[in-house]
Every structure is written in C-alpha cells, then in structure tokens.
Image (tube, rainbow, N blue to C red; front, side, top):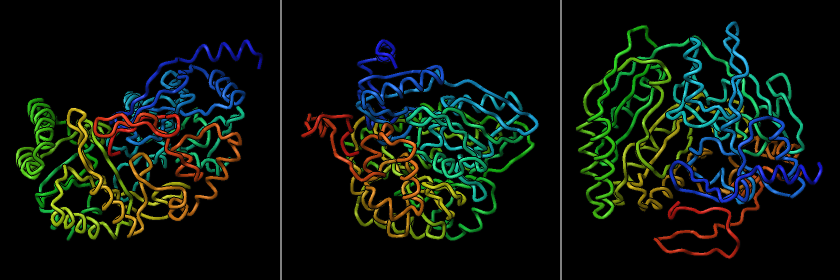
Length: 479
C-alpha cells in the first residue's frame, strides 16, 4: 500500500472518540475510530493496522456490559455496513451485512412474512455482535441464536475473505459462531428463518419453591419458558410463552410501565443506596404492584421475546447444567438471607439447548442461564462484589460457565478447564490472525493468558487513580 493511501485511511478515522457501553460500566478512547461502508474500506483499515502494528476491535451495538469491545488503538463500527444482501423466500433465508442491528433485522423479516425462531431479551446488538458473545433466548428445544446461522463470511487479518458453513471451513464456522471478536471481522450472515408467527405470553405469580419443585414440568410444558425471581420476597413470576393464532392484544400502560415501573423504581433504588435496608421493601412493593397478578398478551414473536431491561445496571450471568438449577437458586436464596445482603430484582432464569459451537457455554450440554443484576440508578455505583463473588463461586462449583457478554473474573487458565474446544479455538485465532490484530486486554486475559491491567484513570469511589501502565479503557468502580 502506498504511503499516500495509508495517510488517506488514517485521515478517515475519527480522533477523540469515546466509546461507552450501554451499561456505562466501561468506556475507552480509541486512537482512531472508523465507520467503513464497504468491504474494501474494511480491508484497507486492516492493511494499515498491519503496517502500523495496531490492534483492531469491532464495536457492535455496545450492549455487552463488559470490556470485550474496548481498545486504545483502532475501533471499527459497522453501523454503515448494514445492507440487506439477499432474501430467499423459498428457503426462508436472509443474508445481511454484519452491522445490521437485530432490531432492524426483526422489522425487515416481519415485512417479508418471516421471523427468527427465537430471540434474546434485547435486540439492540448487531448481527455480528449477536454471534460474538453467545446471545441466547429461552426454550429447552432452542439453542443459542447463533444456531440459526446457515453461513457467514469473514475477513481475516491478512484481508482474505472466507465463506464458512457446516460444509465449508466447518471448524472456522464453529469458532466464528462465538467469535469474541478474535477470529476475524464478520462481513455477512445468512439466517435461517421461518414464517412469521405470533406468541401468547401468559404470566402468573407463585412462590419460588413451587416453581423449583415443578421445574421439570414447567420448562417442558411451554415452548419458551422462563421465570423471574424476586429476591427478599420468596416469589417468582412465571412466563408461559407459546405460539398462537389469536389476534394481537396490547395490555401495555405508559403510566404503569414507565412512571411506576421505570422512573419510580429508579428513584427508590437510588434512595435505597443510602439506606440499603429499604431494598427488600422496594422489591416487595414492586412485585405486589406490577408482577403479582396474572397477565396475558398476544403479539408478533419479536415483540414478545424482547424485554425492557430498564435503566443502567451491572449484570453477571452463568450457564449451569439444567439439573443444578434448583440447587443453585436455593443456595443463592439462602446466602442472601444469611448474609443480610440486599439485592435487586429480577433474577432472570432461562433454559437453552446444547450445541457444538466451540466457545459456547452450551457446548454438548443443556444449560440454565441465571442472570443476576445490580441496578445503577442515575448511574450511581451500587456495591455488589460479595454477591457477585458468591454467585460466581457457586456456579463454578456445579460446572457452570460464564456468559461471554457479562462480567466475570476468569482467566485463560480457568477458561481452558471449562471449554473442551478451547485449544482448537485459540489455534484458529492464531492461524487467521498471526499478527494478533484482533486482540485486546479482555481477549488476552480470557484466551491468550497474557492480560495486564492497564486502565489508566480508574474512577474508584470518586477518586482518580492512575495505573502503572498507560490506559486503554476506563472501568466503572466495582466492575
């Protein structure tokens, strides 16, 4: 590449850009930020990065509450690389560029009478990002969202474009379905869809013990079963979700959903940050007000699958063997009671089918994903470390594995013991990226075992603290 072209590519990057994830738990200031529109522009950015020995990270929708997307070097956002490439109505397959957001994909599919068979609780991430961290929904007959991918194209660090599927470059395909941003840059994804369908969601409240006592029946009786547990109350809200031909019904209420369910909750959790003993009363009050009565709604599938995650939050989520679900939840409930620790609701519990994706938490094992939360009312830090630590150790004790998008403290040594295909995944990364272009501190820590903490200005308790090394990203305290 000629020097003048290198200068042109560098000039196309934005300086002084600050990336912050949705939870505002991590941020970084990349040296250059790019928004390419074409495959050739992506290739040239990689060429320049190779020449200058710069690392490259791709930012999807910024929904991961971890530092997986952070870098101090080159950041690439594919928001302008989001075209629809092909819609095959006969095969019910849709091919799109990797930057298309899932929420826009859902609307596109709906206009064409199609839908994905399952979705996660949020759809603000890009198609490539959905594959990056093993996004999942719920339902014992459904695996990760990545299982609906027929094929994909990616570009390697050397600029080679690979077409991957179960019949072509199969190992790379199975690595790319949970790529952690380390296999290459995903260019396009072909999704296997089905005719659009509606869902009937029926909710009812019951004690957590009743849910756990009948868990095998509950999770197999509905196509998309999940439940929310409300700590300090002993209560749970069960979601029975199944396909239907009934007409759409809308039971939403701006007053109850926004004024009470969002703004009032945020204010009261903020208030409880000064008086933590209020948390159990807040949990009980909102359970009684909003979640204790039976409810029913019918809507298009993607509208029912998605869930309002409310305001900013710390989250951690682990996948455990399904037969350990009741044990883990009972142990967690006992710890909360005995420790006197005050924790927010909800604890979301979902069920996912096993797969063969190399770095999937569901690799060759049906799992239950349990997501715990600590809200950040008005972005205020809420202490949660003892809760996180106990939960992480509890899950590890039963053979659990972390959700890749969420917070955890594991290293490559830990990960290697948990994931049978860890070595194969690492070798594929090294083969496709011999210059280590697609690494950052997160990837070094969890895959390559060479992490170093270099957070520059870490804001801890309102004080600015400099690390010994020059920083690549800023971490919210407690994260």
